[in-house]
Amino acid sequence: MSAYRAIAAISLAASVAACAVGPDFVDPEMRVPAAFAFLAPANTPADTVKALQESFAKAASDPAAKERLIALGFAPEIKDAAALSAFMNAEAARWRKVIKDNNITGE
Image 1 (cartoon, rainbow, N blue to C red):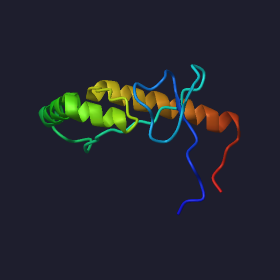
Image 2 (tube, helix red, strand yellow):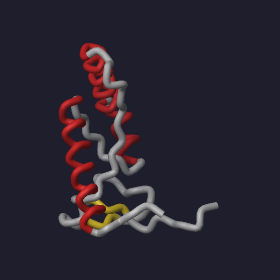
Image 3 (cartoon, rainbow, N blue to C red):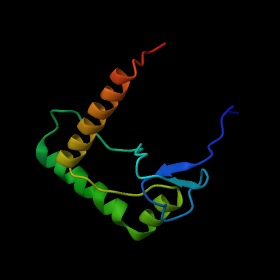
């Protein structure tokens, strides 16, 4: 059993459904996204990447699947490969700056 307990979900806007971990803490200044993505090796053919992305988008858009994801506290947002890459690069740069500016080091 874990020694920790989730007390709130932090988001830019109130969840569309009650979050399984606790109440929402809504603060536009507190942007710490939790992202889940399907990734493929860098040399995967573009047509394969596109077909996979379309399949995932279709599955995540299914009303029953979407409802279940929302009930679990997710806010499904489908991004194509370029948008996902841009998001990941922006987040890496953002957190790299936080780490550097605060002299955070590994233990």
